Image (cartoon, rainbow, N blue to C red):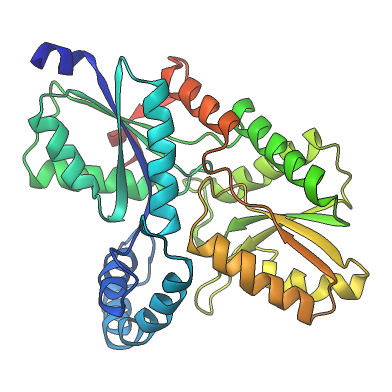
Length: 337
């Protein structure tokens, strides 16, 4: 059995994470871990930590818990359900040489618990598959840093261990093609809009630099999708959502465009989020509900949210190839530190 373990690769499908339950206390625990991450919030600790603990964690958990309650399922949060769905579908395809499981950056099942579990079982090869198509220091690198902390804390020798990551897949044909097919299928049922908005999660503008290719990768993804859909420049826009705080984030902002589009006589739109392979609170609530209301209140007439890929067959087929393909850029997690 031990030799069998040594020959197999553990694939850990990874995403941001989720509270255990949609309660104020559980959301507070989750947000404390998330917003304490130095890769996510780069403000000086002496300023940020008092603000986080004295104000944000006293106010935001209650509001966020109410939002989570609206989207919670019998299997947990939508993100947890969809990540396990993707892992389960991959497990069916990778049943011989791979073991497939889930590890979240924040919350449970944690990266630490899964690394310890599989190292103790005798596995020497672990591959992290972050469900972040576009690389960012706030997401993928944060996972790498957490792996480093876990291995150091638990004194895990890496001499005979191979812990790798897939850095990104923002321009891979299979990812672009599955997104295009998914959009076409939706539009076959619901018609085509005046304009398609391709919305990505925003990051502070100050984060953008040589080690942060996120913005450029988002634009490349969107343009590749638009080209394969044969869209003209007037048929689509690239926007960024989920701005937090008062600092400038990468633009254009989704909310601002939703307010202005009806004034430009664009009143029938669809929104798709290529950076979110799994539906979650941000897509279901922010894009599916809040953005819909903002657009309609601003004079829009038709607003459609295109769900994320989730368990889309073409996307799962792509992930299978991504994992198996020896030419895929699988890098040692330490190369991202």
